[in-house]
Image 1 (spheres, rainbow, N blue to C red):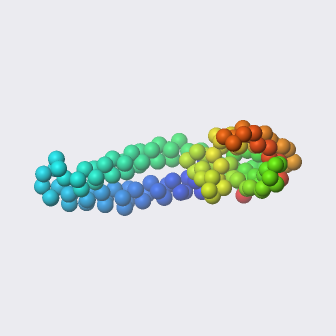
Image 2 (image 1 turned 30 degrees about the horizontal axis):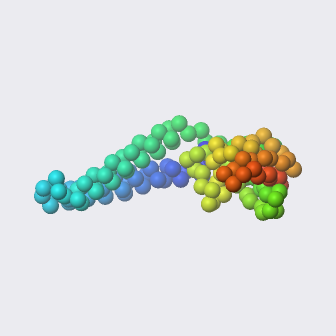
Length: 151
């Protein structure tokens, strides 16, 4: 994953451990004071939230412990992980720019393309000026690579 992706996940983990976890523990303690736990909706909701938080903490710890942080600025050449690629749709002439990142940090709305996506897989190994064919839910699409940057 990229340094930015690692940092974002690490910040989420710190927030879960230092803010969310203590808050849900307080909510459980408060709900217990209301008496009968079998019919206490606040208690059950707080326990469910605690379960979600603990699961997410374990998931983040696992991802971060196995993460291989790659610095894209040290890379160059054909498209590979970390590349920021500007492509143009050969049918509509619409330009788009994506950075190829790991699954955990992918966010298509912010231009962060999952390396396992069909488009990213088609782009890997290609150079500026190359055309790629991508099978999408809407049918076959053709893109031309305009620029490749490592930032």
